[in-house]
Amino acid sequence: MSENKNKTKRELLLPGDVIEEGEDIKPGRGTFKRDGKIYAAKLGVKTFRSGYVNVAAQSGRYDPKKGDKVIGTVIDLNSSIWMVDINAPFISILHVNDVPWRVEYGDTASYIDVGDAVLIRITEVDELKKTQVSMDEEGLRKLNSGQIIEIAPSQVPRVIGRKGSMISMLKNYTGCRIFVGQNGRIWIDGDLEGQYIAVKAIQMIEEKAQVVGLTNAVENFLKEKTGKDLEDSDK
Amino acid sequence: MSGNKDMELIDENGKRLDGRDLDELRDIKIETGILKRADGSAYIEWGKNKVLAAVYGPREMHPRHAQEPSRAVVRARYNMAAFSVPDRKRPGPDRRSVEISKITSEALEEVVFVEMFPRAVIDIFIEVLEASAGTRCAGLTVASVALADAGIPMSNMISSCAAGKIDGHVVLDLGKNEDNFGEADVPVGMVPNTDKLTLLQMDGNLTKEEYEEAVEMAMNACNEIYEIQRDALKTRYSTTLEDEEEIDEDIAELQEEE
Image 1: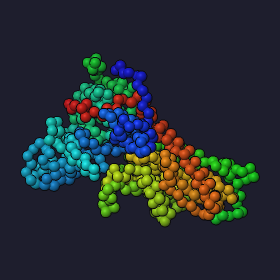
Image 2: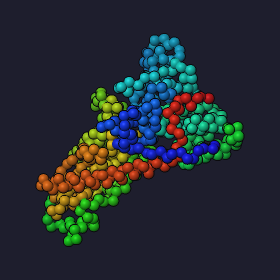
Image 3: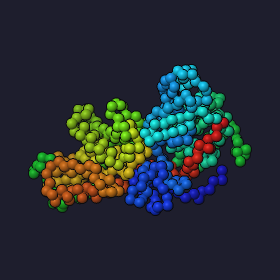
Image 4: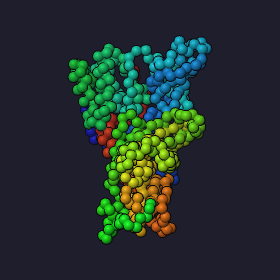
């Protein structure tokens, strides 16, 4: 873990703070433009991406975005759609054409029933925030075993870690299958002991998000709990 | 607002009952993120006032007939605890708290980007735990901090403060006795970025000149309060950022499964 400690400290932006002035950069997510200046609309830090300046929120609810992989729970269904709760302000729609099976009309419940958890991708968010999701893609499926825990959506990048370091460490130590949905729901499957340790480790990440050297702290925790030492094979 | 002339509110040195100058605020302390289950929360101690605010949402509006098809509704609820005043306050909404809920909602609606969440509601609960004059300003101030804490998109926070008139002098931020025995009270809510007012009320009588002086005094104080609001959010969140892992927007590709 030879992390570069000379990172520039990121400045916290509050709603109404000026981010940029100028014409060459466009206002992206979490920002707004007024009188030629770009302001932050949310509490967060700025990021740049393909000519846009965005504010990555540091708090708050999940804001669905096209392309996100999320974990949802089916809360209602009818003959041709499932209604899926994805932890967003609104319920999203999963249509029978968007699942990997050929579903007879009215036969939705025999494939996915109310209460089932699904791994899905957001395919459409329209201007009215109506959200469509799809399961017709490799890797997307119904989650039949394991457990789901919830964290704040803003903490998802921390559980993943830089270039996926944190999540692969969790998987290696606990031997669990873990999937982190961008809506802050995490699916964990594996033997019970491993699941328990993974849940504890994720809770630790969420609670101690501000601790310096979090990756090392989590690694020590995992070592202690699992009795494994994978540090060498990690590198 | 009895305008009682027997009560002396300003002494011969020009100091007020609690030793403040005419244009001096009471002590203000704000903390954020104190309620685990709310999407955002904040707590303020403003002199002897203690006010808690919690934000939930945006979430689906119920009852559904109250939904707005093109925008979100900002629904603030101001409530005083039964134990918040020396004589027990009869619990539940009354004429005063319904009014304050309405003006707070309308003041906050001005800065929230409501059009981003059609059919939704943003619920704000303002609970006054201890009251000692100026709770509507304290409530509005703390509610906008809680909104920022909840990650609600908005153009700016709102800072709020009152000015008034006691013993013939225009003063800032009336205390309990000043409110009861003073001559006028003018609560002001301001958007610090643009100096726009989103809340302005007046209880009692002021001349035009006095009114203008009071509003200007309150607006200056709002800028001071804005800094306190910002500090509260910064102390809570900047620690999180010191050793921030790279914020990767491409996490979708990193979460290779299994």
